[in-house]
Length: 150
Image (cartoon, rainbow, N blue to C red; front, side):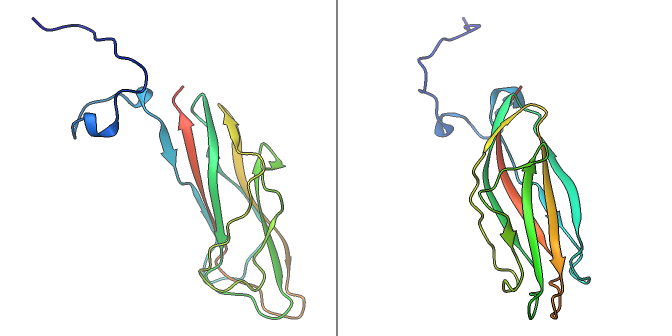
C-alpha cells in the first residue's frame, strides 16, 4: 500500500531530508537570482540605464548589491551608480565609484528591498565627469535577489 498524500507539520522538512536529484517542481521552492550589469573594461565609463531583472515570483526581496570598477579613475573623475525599482531608487544613497580601487566591491545600503510580481530593477550610471582626471573603466553591479514562486 502506498499513500497518495502525507500531511506533515509545518517546518519539519529540511534540506537534509530531501535526496539529491529529487524532482521537486520549481513552483514549490524559493528562487535566488544574481543579475549583473557591466560596461566594457576597455572603455571609459559612460552614462547608462539598463534593466537587469523583472520580478516573476509572487514576491521577493533584494538581499544585497555590490558595485565596482575594473580600472579605477584618477584625479577628480566621478561616476555614480544607482539601483532603481520601477524608476525609484532602492538605495539609501547612490554609490560613488570615482577613485574606488579596481575590483573593490562596494556594498550600498538597501533602503527598499521588497519586490512584487512585475517590479522592474534597473542600474543607472550617471554623474560621469572627468573633472580633470581620467574616468574609471568597467563599471559593474551585481544584485542578489530572492523570490517566492508565483
